[in-house]
Image 1 (tube, helix red, strand yellow):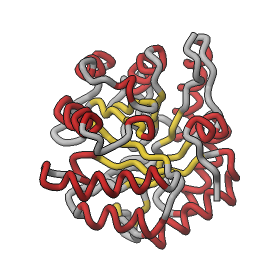
Image 2 (tube, rainbow, N blue to C red; image 1 turned 45 degrees about the vertical axis):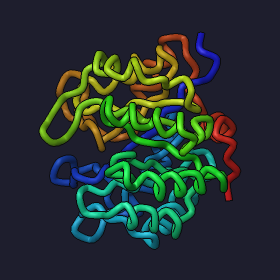
Image 3 (spheres, rainbow, N blue to C red; image 1 turned 90 degrees about the vertical axis):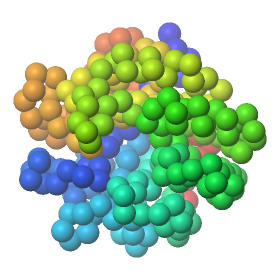
Length: 276
């Protein structure tokens, strides 16, 4: 059995879907906070948060993030870690992504390597920023979309631009545009990447094979991100009722495999986080 319990992160909304895609997609602060409490009870150790404007559009806004974090703490207490995103969706520059993190000072943040450093000319500024996050105790998760991203991250670690012991990785299987449904075998494309040198790793997957992809990752020693950001359907193709249903289903599958589901405190201890 693996030495560490499997952490489940809930990604309840993402940057692109709206309530027209699913009526229970949480887009308001109140709905996000309520969802945090529900997925915590279902087994999630962390919630991955996107905030939206009044037209349900993805937005990087420090005030909205601070309001969301406070609402989640009121609804779910310290029993769930709140991770914000810097996803650009083609709207935000690397400087704007870094600025919102500096303004919010979250306990956890996910950052796409290709967005924070679109070219190698951006490596210096991006690596200084990433090192500063790790240095002040924020849990840093770097998003990897393909083998090229993985090779770049390895090179940064080789050159001392990041400390792999302080970096978690999120491997993304499948995509929105052009549409590509994930399969567990997609994780094998990252096999040459030396993921074991990094603190830990997690998988998210687009499409109805989300749970099999997560189980494959869990059995290989990884963690799992699941939710309406990547998939709104059950394995049989019917619409999932809620994010909590998706988390509960994943929790049940992990336990059925003889593995333990991590609590927020398990993950917070692994990442050496102290909640403000």
